[in-house]
Length: 340
Image (tube, rainbow, N blue to C red):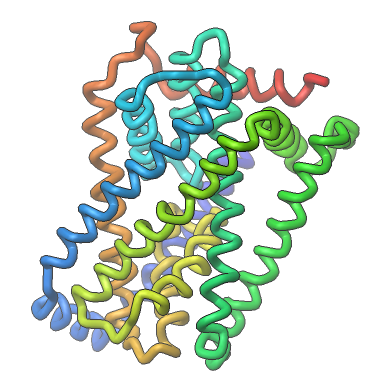
């Protein structure tokens, strides 16, 4: 019931935001004119850059799997990553596809299921830590511009609070893992299960810290490639934006859209782009097109994961469905949460 209510609320928010973004007929006319004049060659470049993103993301996850002695091979690892991206498009929340990726990885790992599951959690944790540093670094160069207008200044303040909270939680995870404090949390603690899982991942990967640091460093070119896909969208519509401008805005968008406010960030992402690009002199119509086009570039790459899933064959040759995936992942998560 609670999940259904949350889903209904997300859909309602998404519809409302989309109406707000596209309801102005003058804005739609400006978007149509911009589409007619667009340089579509930049979109093909963006698709190619996104493919590089998938390679770098596979490298990062492969390193984390190797720390736990799980060797699925490069092709199989890339397949599971692409499948996870595909399901992220259709399962609500930015981590919905992780359930599928966790399940399939657990099937491949067989006798090392807990490590397989926690590798996905650690992949998320490392990505978040890298995003925090990237956000702070590029905001330093464009803080004066972004704090100029009330709307972008409010979003900037929101980001800084979210980053501060993320730092506290991340440090707390490592400290709690080192001293075993997480298991002392009361059962009623919000998100206790997820806290225990991330703490367990931190504990496991602290032992292979050299490879974990290497995976962390891979995150920087990975995020750079992701941001460049939106830069390609900006160039397609001749927006007056440089790389640093795009790199200073995207972390704010990435962090806020990761919160399950709307379905896959749709509507919310466009609203953020309109507010954040206004100080750079980008018209709302162009800002909306940059957001939509950048998202479509990434969506096209994620849809490719559907083709991968169509031809994917598990090494166990079992017939699987989403309900079974959720049950097994939940069972293992519960096992990890109650382990000492």
